[in-house]
Amino acid sequence: MHTHTRTLLAVAAAATLALTGCAKSAEVTGVEAAPKVPASSSSSSSTPAPAPTSDDNFPTPEPSDLETTTEEPDTTVTEGKFGDKGSFTIEGEPFDVTVKKGVRAKCHYQGISCDKPETGDRYVNVPIIVKNNGTEALELDPGMFALEFADGTRVDTSDGSPYQYGPDNTLDYGQKVRVGGTLKTSITMEAPNGPYSIVMLTNSFNGEDLFIWK
Image (cartoon, rainbow, N blue to C red; front, side):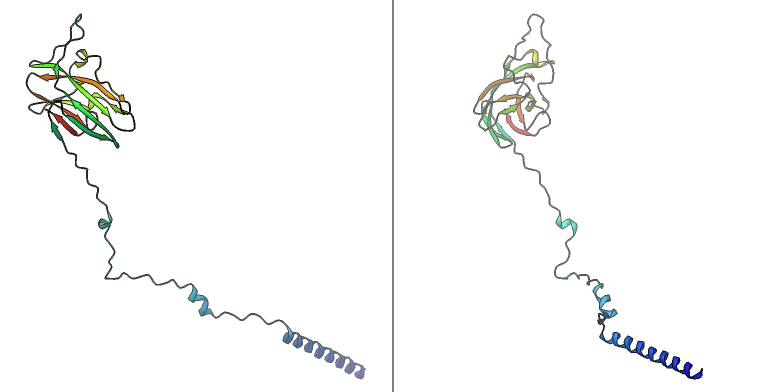
């Protein structure tokens, strides 16, 4: 019995040595693992770049230095006598306007009479000639003209009842002048018995002065 037991132990020991040898051999001949990256290299890649420093020779401009200023165009008012021609441009389209001396307007409703002007005033009809020198139709309206008294007071075609005294060719709102065409029209306004001027504006009613006929 003792001899058989020794034999089994010897066989088991030999088998253990054989398995151990195989394990060592596999560990030597297997594929080598990739080398580990040092911890210092991974941390350096995430370090942000240093912020740029301003150069004293080139200081950062203040916001006020970067703002652009827009100056209002200088509108020059030209004066002339009644009968003179003024040359103008609207959106790049040139045209000429001639304003003649006004004449006393007559009531066109004799059968039912017309409203009377203010005391010391009269209704006048002012002839106007417009020549379109541009490449597009020109649009005008009576609000582009005003009558100025000697004291600086102004009226326009909406004051009083000038429509009762206006002739058939009175300048209408939104009236157009074809390219190369000439419009002979007129405006009727209430005027003083004394001297007055006719002013042309850049646009209807709230525009700036362009030309003054005296």
